[in-house]
Length: 74
Figure 1 (cartoon, helix red, strand yellow):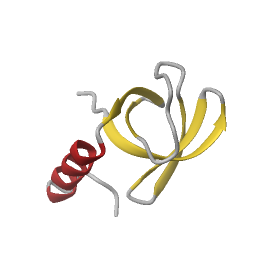
Figure 2 (cartoon, one colour):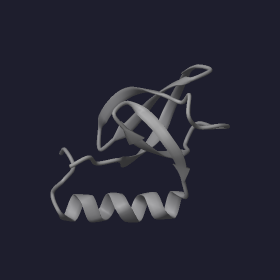
Figure 3 (spheres, rainbow, N blue to C red):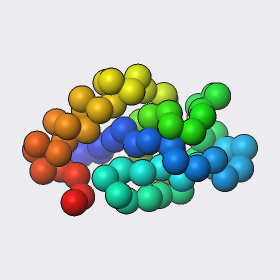
Figure 4 (spheres, rainbow, N blue to C red):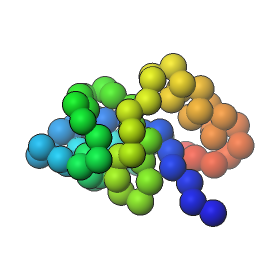
């Protein structure tokens, strides 16, 4: 089973590279597949790639559900 998860962009490192945060875990990802990502945006991440941007309210709702299911670190 594959899982793509919402993560918040906390740093833009290069034109197609960002650092994202997910419950305190920071990871470098590629933005090559998504246009116009800004600091604070939420993106769906799978295998180190942002697949799409996500509405902040929807991202927070999804992260709450993952936390309740104990699927997130922390």
